[in-house]
Amino acid sequence: MTKGRLEAFSDGVLAILITILVLELKIPHGATIESLKPLLPVFSGYVLSFLFLGIYWNNHHHLLHAIKQVRASILWANLHLLFWLSLIPFVTGWMGENHFARVPTALYGVVLFMAGLAYWILQTVILADHGCDSSFRDAIGKDFKGKASVGLYVVAILGCWFIAPWIAWSIFILVALMWLIPDKRIEAALKKSL
Image (cartoon, rainbow, N blue to C red):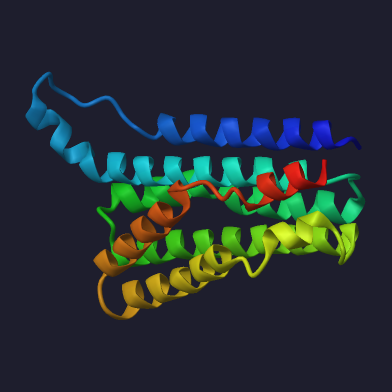
């Protein structure tokens, strides 16, 4: 399989996930601003999940640019990531419909944690496949944001479960804000290697 085909497939899956996500937004019954209030939890979840999917798409795009060849291990690691990302519309809808109740919010955190872990696995598989002396390894470096995100998801899940769901929600927003500034390490390293 070519790198372009892997990118196209992954882009298509993420586009479908964003489409499914927006379909969870139901039309309000009424034509006033007041009729929108019941939709605020669902819309808030939509905005956050849209950001997360956009962040994954952006970083996944840069990650795949570093690939020179696509092997089966990369395909499976990529599918593993897409599996966890495919659950985001479901947990987003459940969390929003239940006004960020403890169990749906904790499960949302579990899905984000597993997606973060799957992304790390994909990155690790690519690193192993492309050798220790690659420019990609230099670009990844210590991957502080990636490791911090996964750790923060654990704190969010525990905080939600043992204290209150608003703690998880706050941490999810913090992680999204951390990643809103695109990670330019891979792009810069690839430019150097040209």
